[in-house]
Image (cartoon, rainbow, N blue to C red; front, top):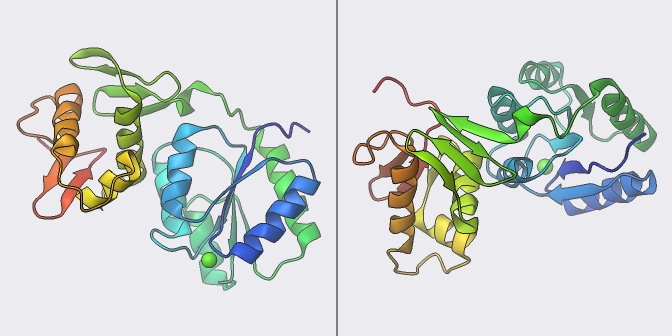
Length: 236
Ligand code: CA
């Protein structure tokens, strides 16, 4: 089996994560570990993974929301849900949100490893398939490998910071990002920094991607709170 493409483990409890990483690595898998759904979505935009092992109850957005967003973005990566919520209803909800398999905690490690292997085998997942290299909204298409964007205004080579900011917006699609979060995540600045840099970046993104940058539909200002990216705005 090809173990070269890493697995993404999304688990906020350190001792559970450690145990799973240890056992997966023993089997020869590479594992990337994140603790929140937001970080998982960001990772998936940056890099190809063979499988997601996803805890359901997480700080911030939960595992079901992660499933939902991935599937609505057209991402078909196999998802194995891990959860303490072992009721029938949770299992059905998880599967209806697009998860491929489900294990209730506490589970047997052998069974866990067999499920991982089974999903990888069945999925025949092509991590470098072209549809996962792109993020699309409106008539804008961004190549996540080359950082090039094709827009109504032409083709643009995005800078590293512009990409960082875009990936954060995409991962939090539909949610308000405060100025503080953006300053911290994109620039590594204190959330209280007084600077126009951030606003200038948003102006630039609007110039690239909005049909009318003075009436933004994708990169919206939420007064007194921050900014919000909408992938599929309704109407005009
Ligand atoms: Ca948890």
